[in-house]
Length: 225
Ligand code: CA
Image (cartoon, rainbow, N blue to C red; front, side, top):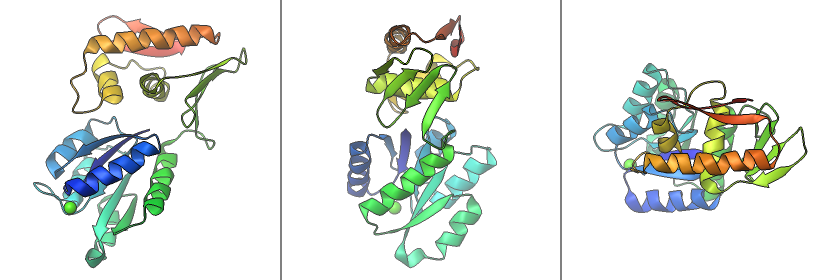
């Protein structure tokens, strides 16, 4: 699961990001509202944690613009206790949930899990495409046809999560690179090919009939062979 944290207090942001990474979330951080808005609009995040008081653009303005652009990514807003009236404003503006600062880490994790479930296609949190089942929490990719399974590496997991979410459509290399390497990273697009190749070998190993098809000049598509 790929999360975006938008929080200008750096020490707070780093602490929260660290806690989330320990829970195996892939976390990017933005430190102001403008860059946060751009990152959310990229559409690559599974959920967003958004502070209200931010430089350049406040959290309410960010969420309003996100919803105006029809981006449905679940958003958890963080507000200070003194801003309790903000709860209503935040939910009105299109946030899915809110949490008042200071909060307990366990509370934050519970809210984030709930947010990610909103986005998950199946009740058991597993992603499916054809004969493939992917359990994001264990990174185990299995084939229902052969009963074989294999564990994916971190990059392969993010890559497969995205291809499964977008199954039946062509995903550009740029979007895949963003999804797997992050918004700020300038990962070589060649890396995408390398990890596609690793993942194809794993699909073959478990005997899946699904394939990652390269569509010349456009990108990749996960589909039945
Ligand atoms: Ca703040």
